[in-house]
Length: 586
Image (cartoon, rainbow, N blue to C red; front, side):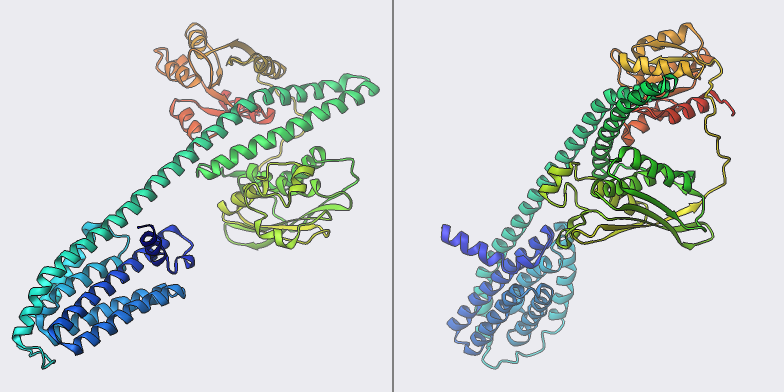
């Protein structure tokens, strides 16, 4: 039995190595089995003809067996499509041959068998109901043809009425039984394979969802303490300006290390979260006007500050003179793309330079096509590694991963972000000779916006703000920021107390954390929105959260919140959101 099973599997898998996808492999396996059964049936027919003394028919059937088996040779050579076409043509020949040589009754059962098998060959992925409808339609047409031509005498003189009757009687017993067994086996085999694939796909989807959920939770838990580290480092950095020169230098040096570490950890968190969102198809892009020059200058400054300064690397920014300033798109994602490329260049370059060039390639009535080039004189990338450079978790080598660190996700995420916006990314490099990354993207034309002068004092004009936040460190951070921006604040530690405070007092705005004990931010907002006092029920509410998945954003706005600010808190984003909520005009 084991020998039979091994032999059957080998026969079924002829030519399967030429199919890359599981669906194609399943079709080839099914076709091989149908070819075998076809040859088997014709062999039985040949024996039947031999017993009737019809030697010419025996030779024809032997030739048919050889013709069917030639399909195995075509499959083994990789010509699966030609094999399928040849099988269908020969099956049609067999039907017409039996009709013309042995009459309608003689060829009818073989015709049904070929029709059933041919249906599987032509339509291997169709549901059985549709397959039977198609088969019935073809059968009706061919049966009508044979019924309408009974007056045609058999072309083979040895076929007497007596032999035709005996042939029909033998096939009436053998062929339907064989037909039912074969059809049942093929249907059962096909359906079991589909069930297995469906089960595996369900397991794979469940695993993907579990992974995304895990990454989202891990990201949220890491962002909460990171919010405090980054926030207080920024505050102390600003306060250090009041110290004397010597203490200021030492103070800023230590704070700089904190900020660099916080930035690196935040980058890893963002990579994990972006990877989860891309895999789940949940990543979204914003469209707003922005200043291109400001974005690329900030990118270079950030790379210089957080990216290994002190190595003596020269950084160059070379924008074209005719480069458009005002674009419309997602500046945050553009910054992420460029910072990934420039950051990588800084990481892998020990001497020489890192240069970013920006050129305009084309202009239409509504947009610009821009080319961003990031070139370095670093360690380079071996030619054999270039095809895998943008794969997930794919550092150039194990030694590179150990020496330089990183998640191995940066370039994979960058490629996804570029291509999801309709752009393209490429790389040219060789070992020891640096690398050149090129990004080609279209942007819409933006409107010119008046730039805010640097150093303008942030002022919330004594706005009365309720802060709902359960984390003690985050409470202190938000309090420090808002009070420095001239706001009056009241802090509560959960949504239930936020609801009570809103019922008792009037606030100009509520800053609401989402994940809190007793009552979370979503539920608190929903309860506030149904208060009878119209002034209190319509108070602006801004969500404060470390969870930035698209589902969370939908829940936030569905609950009636006006805006959302993510952790770690970016002071400029928080201030802008507060001014929008308070409807303050500069």
